[in-house]
Length: 142
Length: 142
Length: 142
Length: 142
Picture 1 (cartoon, rainbow over the protein chains, first blue to last red):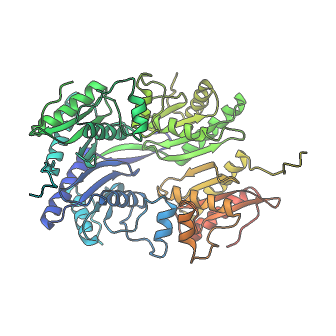
Picture 2 (picture 1 turned 135 degrees about the vertical axis):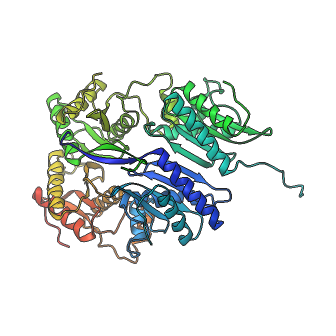
């Protein structure tokens, strides 16, 4: 192998769609329609669904949550609140400290993230965790 | 019913995900990974998937195709080529005349659209038609 | 390994800096200051340099070339000229058919791309090829 | 010399790359992968690297820090906290008071700046100071 490369893993689209389905099932169970975004480790969109009745603008918050969790490889809402607005603005708006973004960690590697938006913070996290569970990714407890 | 309202139909997220699955199956059959975008009649994203190996920038072209088909309630690529760039620019970039965007018409109403991008124009159209077939929407022959 | 992942390679930052250095050396040899952009396979910036005297706006063209080559996993300037403007607009401006963007292929995998801008098309390609050569990536002949 | 001109100094690209290398070496020593941005006195990008494992969104914060330090010709984080968000928004988002941006001052002139992002504020500053040291620029003590 070239010394200028390092091996890594990518989330497949089948995995992304399965994670989406797991999140949708949990959102139905909770009775809360959601926007659910799955991104790869580069923050690029892999899969998305907006459920019937989900809030339109929460699509963007779900994307920001997913991109932030992929970038930082940790759940959103762990930044120091004293810096969260400064960081959000300096990063061009995508970096968010809202609850509901979780990294997708499989075999010890962060291969993407899920972001959920349209419910309460706690509901968003619960639905995101269901996405992780559907594909056997490491749980991310609040 | 108020005289100030008119009844309409909306595509459900289950329908959008089923259309997505139909498109994915066809793309696999063709051996061409695709970006597949489903939007509602307001041009707002309902569902999306980027298949393993699909071209990254074609995500945006698939979205432009879907939004254009929903807006004009007809397949993309039917605009007069003499005007297509002027229209694209004047519309802010989203209006495209590239092949691969089809309206989703059910019970005579356009309730959204599908846009496909990463293959040839003909492949994109074939995959978009498979999305329509999966939910019993009117076929849109080239 | 999880069935929801696929193995892949990433370009290291040392590789990206070495590619940058190879491109700078070639540009000096040609006597043409250049903007040189290296992106990963997700189109995200890995390394960049603007040489003394390089054209300021060519930074953006070098980025568009790199992102396009990474997205399409082939040299830029291979799109059908009849579609190139439509594609550029529909993709939000980043997709370009200008010469000077080459994919970085190592061990048969596209792990990123280099984009060069500020010279003639032929000079840009020559400098981009020097970047590839510096890290033992597959040559991309025009 | 025309009375309508004033002499100034510019940071060369070789200087920018050397500063980058100094920062990378320090970041490795600290064990913290970083995004490192060098801009000229006009706030325009001169050189950049994202180290393996650095946070993706911190690319933008490193740029905001560099542009702010070049603009104000002083380290970031010296603005009155009471005004920092108002200033950030009014300036279009690039003006930041986050730690990690330092002006590059040589022969008494500010010829650019370095911005670092992905570590703690203190780590970011330490890596930025290493960039200054590598090219004999004035140290900027916290």
